[in-house]
Amino acid sequence: MSSPPPLTSLAEIEERFGEKTAQEVRRAANLLVQRQFLYAGDRGVAAVYGILGSNRYRLYFETLFDALGYQFLHSDSEQWVGLLPDPDLDTLPRLRLDHTLILLLLAHTWQEEVQRGATEARALVVTTVNELFDRYRDRVGRHRKEALTPARFLDVLRDFARRGLVQIGAFDPEAQDHQLDIRPMVNRLITSDALTRLERYAPDLEARITQAGEQTDAEAPPTLFDSSEDAAR
Image (cartoon, rainbow, N blue to C red; front, side, top):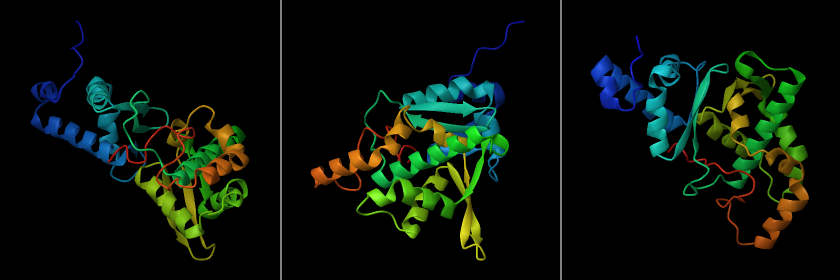
């Protein structure tokens, strides 16, 4: 007996599985658009992840998000789903410079720890906000005329936490620090040579920013990162 044809519309889902299931699928898609990335381990996300990660609805989600200009991504082994702007469409705003640099730093840190075999379940890398800030200061901040303060650095990380890319733990008053979980999705948000660009960032990019003069913080250089902070808004 042949398998039923793949589902490509909400109407087909409702016809086959009922209105309640169709509404659940719709809510799952809406939540992914709001967050951009969803991690199965997050509180309250397991059921939504189960829908978004199901092969039953895969073609529907791929078709839906493709029509909206996004690539639908899913990692079964790492248990996350996400959206990336279609690289062939250059219609979305780019990341701010500071967000770009910190995202590259997150990916660089994640890759280093993976190479060392220092990952938790679901390819999670555990560090702290202070440790990551030290990396930022050593690799990036000392080359910038207006390096981020620790408070602003934490604000940028919170922006990424809202996207599901990292998780920031509660403040530890004794350590004066937060645990920081870096999730594997960060590695999918960078171009192939972006980490090399981060290493040589100082002499190259700082000179271009100085020459530009008029460049605002909202106008990130297009060579570093091709996705969008606001892709899911």
